[in-house]
Amino acid sequence: MDRSLRAARVATYVYFVLCGTLMGTWVIHIPAIEEHVGINHATLGGLLVLLGLGAFIGMQVVGPLTDRLGPHIVVPAGGILCGATLVLPGLAQDPWTLAGALLVFGFCNGCLDVSMNAHAVHVEKAYGRPVMSGFHATFSVGGVLAALFGAGAASASLNPAAGMAAVGAVGIVIALASARALLPAAPAVEGPGSGSAEEPGASPTVKRRSAKGRVWLLAVLALMVMLCEGAANDWSALHLMDILGAPAGTAAFAYGLFAAAMTIGRLLADRFVARFGSMAVLRHGAATATVGITLVALGPWMWAAFTGWALFGLGLSGCVPQLFSAAGHADPSAAGANVSRVAGLGYVGMLAGPAVIGWLTHFVALNHAFVLLSLLCATTAVGARVLRTGSDRTRESEPVAGNH
Image (tube, rainbow, N blue to C red; front, side):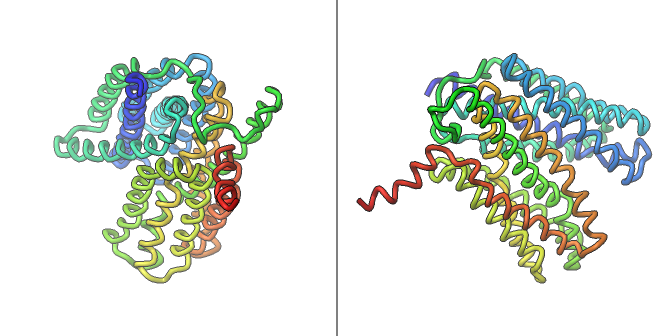
């Protein structure tokens, strides 16, 4: 294995950890910033929409830019900008300045998110085997690092601005130091199982049109999957408290199990993709998530809820990485633009998930509102066929060939 390729993979891990750490640092400072600015939960909820809006815009802008300039330029720039703007929410003095800070930070975070995923596609392509899920697992590691830093900052009585500035400065140094190891452009190697589902004899125009249509199907699936993930982030603990009467300390384990199962699943998913193919991982993962959230929605016991949330996280764990990977491989020359479409629509789903479930609770109980998530996961399992590639067809034909 080429040492430069191994270095590029390590650098990609670093950027995923960096992105998770920067976003996690903002998250752990939300209560302190909310108190400092003097706003209530409802106002904060409205301002968080601006964070999502900024990220969505950043994703759409930087996707084509990554294809044009190369990830070795755009990824470090995204990391530097994201680190530099992290301090802005901590400096906000009123709702208006916080709104502007969140819009700018969200934009820069979206730039880093899409560009590093586009580079991850190039690394996976050069490796010739699945590695995308491992990158997404390290994003969660960044969240853990942010939580550890938050505990240390609290014990040192650092105010939000000082703590966020410190993390941002370290982030800028890391982004600069890791830049040299990145791949300059998409490699010419075609990795197994990562190619387009199109026939090799099709004309370039037909292939591009087919790839674009396929990418939008992937984006719709990403919206459904990430809507489910967003709903779990905000409603898992509340479900145990409101429906099953669990104390707050016990209820927190619902999200803990979901997050832990998702991280473990992503650490293992690449091996399953290499063995069974991305379509199988998406299909069976979504089916597992369907079983898990249905158990949560209909199970009247605490153990059923814990089991359900764990299965939900495990099932969803490999879904998003496969959708991002397929989008990037659909047309390697436009990997950034395609990943931005899938990530952008998926991000809309993540933001909409908590709101959609909250709206449904006006009509049904919280656990019954989760039936919508069951339907979305089941639909994703059916739609997994969009990931079917030539290697999947070969894999499906092997048992038949063995009978002759």
